[in-house]
Image (tube, rainbow, N blue to C red; front, top):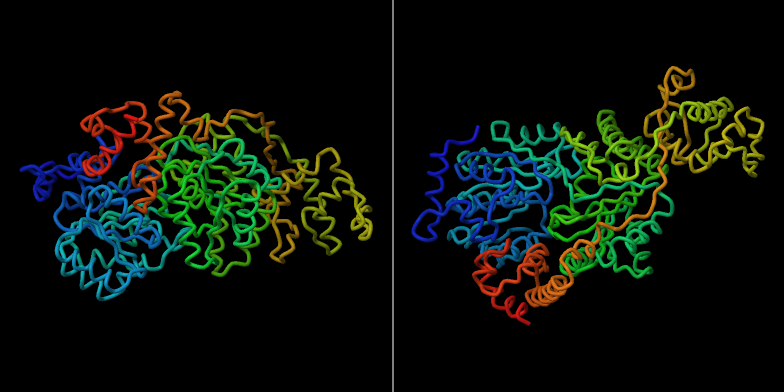
Length: 621
């Protein structure tokens, strides 16, 4: 239940006085952040925390989670303490807040003693609005003692899904965060995440002792993202084609499973004229930090990375996220694709997916550490991801259903734009499984390539050497192409009707459910890709900005050039100065006075004072 209005008002009266009267959350939003109104559940969440209540917030990336704790921290007396695992990004987070006139600082292992002491004094003096802490700092007694001696407005636990022990971003230090409730029972807590199934949601609430808190679950739909999953066929070449056709000059992220693949893919892009940088845990920490800094500060760079990169990245103009390998879970896929289009403009989530992905992931699960329960959980995650890849219905509907939400066909994912055909693959499945049985009867097991050669009747040297042309199944699948047969294998693996041995060779074997297909008591529905025709690249930044018109687009590009120079001078990412959406509105409305400029969304009081005169000069030119 929401807190009664009187309680909320009482909390607001404790806020700093701006003009002789109490400043409300809405006033803070407008003065500091330059936005006129809250979105979705933001106002109710903020009122809950301002009134001293706890909240657990599930909200998609780009939905405005940060405001849900930043505004209450500015309204309530004391300092808002933010627990975040994103050590490498804390400086950028503090820089972005400082540009808004918010007094922010952080404490983590990257600082020297003098800098830590300066931040600690500011906290104790009450001159910090927000203090960012890495979760491991709360295991240090000196940090807990410091917090005891200061005035705390609230605790915000960002990326709260990290507390889920079987989640894709588990952080052991998050398990210690119950200390916040135990030592400061009267300080409100707000935990936030962009990714949580119903089970993960419940686990977060239990582990952080937030079962009695108010829970806010926003829609996980990101309508500006177009989800596309394509068959893998020379994926690096496919990626280059995608970027050249739809995202020339755009910033984006490419995810690969291995460090070697990251290095090779980044080099491949550079060789084809696409500026790209690698990022993975095996790189020197200084190289990683430099590459991340360049990605955040420069326009049009592509970051090729393992999943070690991305959480907390606030760069709003990432126009695409591409996966060259199958993610291990829907949660991971959603979290990673959500880094595209934070500014609400059209963006692409593209995944190349093939038979080898399924084989590799199944083998990794079979050989993983942990007990049988852990392996079953990993298999369940993979099964859900495979179901998303193989669906013949709307990708967005399937994605939302995974998180316990409903949706309507979006008309903007690949299965909506070019619906695949569902066909009865029972006979094809029986042929393939029969081939595996015939080989098994000889005490032999082989991978998909050799089994498909037998079905196609290919008299390869290996087939002849092994005498497999004498098998009764030799040539019985000549009516289906090699590519289609590989699709049949992939989909049977995805449906659990076929399995891969954990021998490192990808050899095929039957499962407990395979006999049902062979006996004809179970039918098999398979997916056949529809022919895809070329269509306009609605996702590219150029297409998105062309709607401005020629004159406005010229102004927009001038503003972007001014912003780039200003950001370079200040040593901050361009979006810290202004987001593209703000520059677009300026280019459209062409304000001529500071008062008019102050009505633009994203132009708060501090930014108006800092950049207003310069902006008007650019516009006057």
